[in-house]
Figure (cartoon, helix red, strand yellow):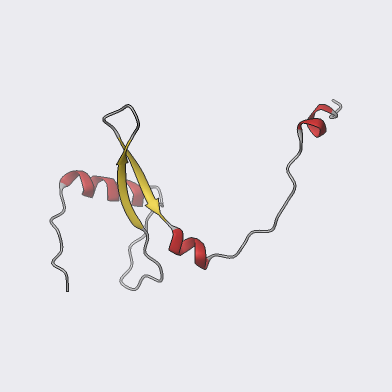
Length: 79
């Protein structure tokens, strides 16, 4: 088994924040695990949080399709 890496205070705060708003859930028997990482924002010293949910997306049902209105449809609206 890989040795767990130490968890720093900022990472712990991030995970708690994500859990508080329902973006992550804790389980001892997860059916799907998403990777979390950061990349630098362009032109900034800030980091962009990336949740890699590709495995989860493969397990979900395809939503029904629908047609979005075109600019012509919006222009034809009468109020």
